[in-house]
Amino acid sequence: MQFEHPLLRATLVRRYKRFLADVVIEGGEEVTVHCPNPGGMTGLMEPGSELILSDRLSPKRKLRYSWELVRVGATWVCINTGLANSVVHEGILGGLIPELSGASRVETEVPYGQGSRIDLLLHDQEDQLTFVEVKSVTLAVDEVALFPDSVTARGKKHLEELGRMVEAGHKAVIFYLVNREDCSMFRPAKEIDPAYAEACEKARSQGVACLSYQARVSPAGIEVGGKISTDLTRLQEPSASNSPYPSR
Image (cartoon, rainbow, N blue to C red; front, side, top):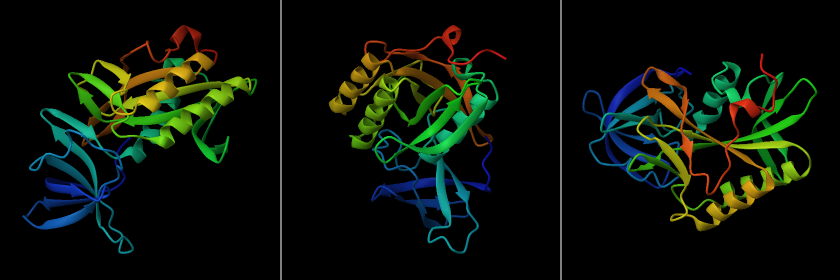
């Protein structure tokens, strides 16, 4: 996935009020930009960090620029949580996720459950449904990717909805897209949100499957990279040989 708007580099001054950040753009001007990430963003807000902004070029927007990437050491991290669904969608269509290969149709943002919307709804040729909830992961500690980075009642609800879909006879997958390339494993962040970790375990027991993939992130674009291991004490992981769809 390539960024659809022009990009420019900036330096972080501070992030505040969840959705705002002050930055210095090329040329030395300090401006306020939109931060499209409501989470804790632990480790991603160091003043002086190199950023990539998108220029939305819209006179209707209150804030012209949006924060897209931040460099942590040698690693680019995508902080824009709104991009994860598109990246995974493209990965499925491009055959980059063997466990979800062979779908005859993929729908996005489909209403389901109790006032929820599923990120991706996959249909096989016999119209068997697989509900895929995508989570953008940015927190990393010692090469381990963690989710969530702050307490998330909404994320817990999503896991409960997936469990109900399995109980109704469908397939369900929680897909963690690790939006940085310096991690070798994923696990739920029990130390940050114990209730979410417990919901993960319950979902696992109901048959919700887990996939953890690393994204390739750079100013040139973002795409699904390779699968990384998951802490299986909390979530089960489907194998490529047990894809819900026939191989093409």
